[in-house]
Length: 396
Ligand SMILES: Cc1cc2nc3c(=O)[nH]c(=O)nc-3n(C[C@H](O)[C@H](O)[C@H](O)COP(=O)(O)OP(=O)(O)OC[C@H]3O[C@@H](n4cnc5c(N)ncnc54)[C@H](O)[C@@H]3O)c2cc1C
Image (cartoon, rainbow, N blue to C red; front, side):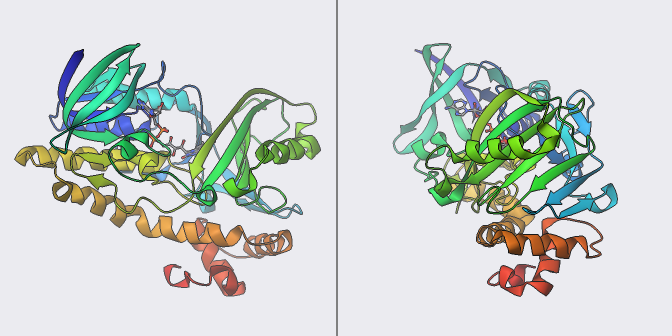
């Protein structure tokens, strides 16, 4: 059996994996990133919407090659059609670009290669290797051939319900009420506003989630839905999405040219995303916004933190859980409060009936919020509907 050796093996070449590989390689660590698919970033499993602010924080320069559309703002729509339109000045931290995600992911992988990381495609991790109880690498199938990659540390960047994490003894399986099941069509010839992302909320529209329209130019848009796992016994996501498209006049002459489905976790992150000789990043660690299901920026941040922490650990050669704990501190200091607050808000919003959602949207559209983000919206809601934020008002 072919055996490779390195300092760090990264499983998964999504945004979390590529950022981790880049920062590990930059720190002088011998890095191998493996990806089970034949092409990085494809097939698409994303609505491709991101805000702009975090890009600078993780050192990513906006690049026209992966930006499909630059948004002017966003619209939030209630079940009865009340809308709240946010222009760019107000929507700063919540809207931004609609990506060409497959090109974005490849650009991040390219940066990892530039930094010195090796990439192995069509290489699927099949287990971890333990010797005397200690993690010492992974087993994988590379183009059909069994291989081993021996490493001092493993980065699990393998996404939703990380299998690598599970093989390493970390519980990553999710309960049905902690996931949203998603379905998305790429619609063409739609009569939509090309400058605004739209979010439609309400029990009758998308129970426990929301419906989105993210424009991609030329009458093309990602039109999708996420609904809570407990409401998905029988293809309900499709029923809700088809009903919306069939009844919204903007899609009268429109057709789908692409369909995709996927899952996002909608709960707080793992209790601990490190153990001896292993770090989990991005979706693998459930570090994703529970209310929007947005996780690209979180994956990039956590990938970067993992690379930085491992670079420090390499100086002493200590990759024990204790030595990796600075990673836990970094992501929690930066994101934990917000993720927890958004989780509480999501749980509560899921219980509201359509009439209350109509009232909430009417209320926020009449408010004078300076910049719209989940935090500021909750502050307005807290004043008028304190019951909605009961139990987590201290976080607002
Ligand atoms: C329908 C949908 C819409 C979304 N829309 C948005 C959005 O608009 N904006 C946003 O910010 N986020 C969105 N997200 C979430 C976002 O896609 C994720 O948060 C993000 O991709 C997480 O990055 P990651 O690197 O952690 O994981 P992933 O991007 O999932 O990457 C994991 C990689 O690991 C690989 N892999 C898995 N197992 C193995 C294995 N055993 N061996 C080798 N490779 C393996 C996979 O093939 C994959 O390439 C959406 C998610 C879904 C499902």
